[in-house]
Length: 364
Image (tube, rainbow, N blue to C red):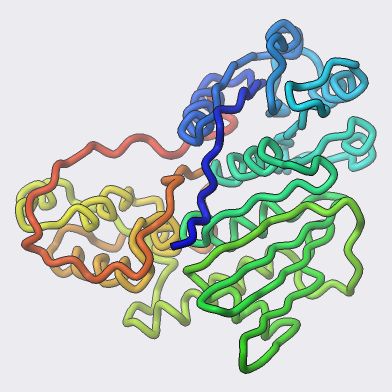
């Protein structure tokens, strides 16, 4: 079978972030993806940690001293190159609550910018996109839809003053979504039987849960009229997934669930490992939509497991949320495609206490 999870040789990453908790979270997340992370709190410290040269620099707007964009500009002007013979790519994490100067990004030659607060997975995907690029002018990343849900691809591909394309394939069908300046400007879906474009194509692609993708940043601006703003596009994905969930018996994927760990422990001998893993994600913060994206089982199986956990008193509905929380961390590996619903007598599993998954980016 074809794998959409390319192996990555260890890459050196320089992470510049003054806040202790965000730096620790980002460091752990990148290390889980195979990066060797060196941290710095400010630009002066970062300059001292450039030997050996990193394969990627990730800098937050929150540094103890200096300006990240000035540092990026200096890196691009420096004659030193990375071990791969090209300029060191730079990922800038800006504060989306403050005005962003596109001219400054362009002048500093920043390859990629991600607005925060955001999903940790978005930052890691953007980092891999740059670090693994074989063509610096057109970086691309290949992965599995089971590991990176469509909203992640849309958010990472939506860049200020830049265009990108997401090519997707699922069960013999092919799709293409084009983005420019944070807007969807094109969508196309085709199979052996039919071809669709525009909103119908986008809504069809939004329902794909298995398959592969290639996310590519373009050196040129994509043409086309605006089809959807990013916020609207993300909402349409939620709507399409809700229709899918309703088809298999669950009509609310904006609900938040919370697990009762005492009940889980009491029934541990009767609960299979996949159900335990899903229960551990039920922290009273994640929506069902986020559970579907993070679970290692396919979506129909995940929904049936959620209902079974509720029926057995292990999980309960907490509240409904319209928006995602500021930061989330999910597993980086892919899910088991089309896994059958596990039997409840599969055998005992061990409880692993859930680790903190959120932080307030404004709080130390």
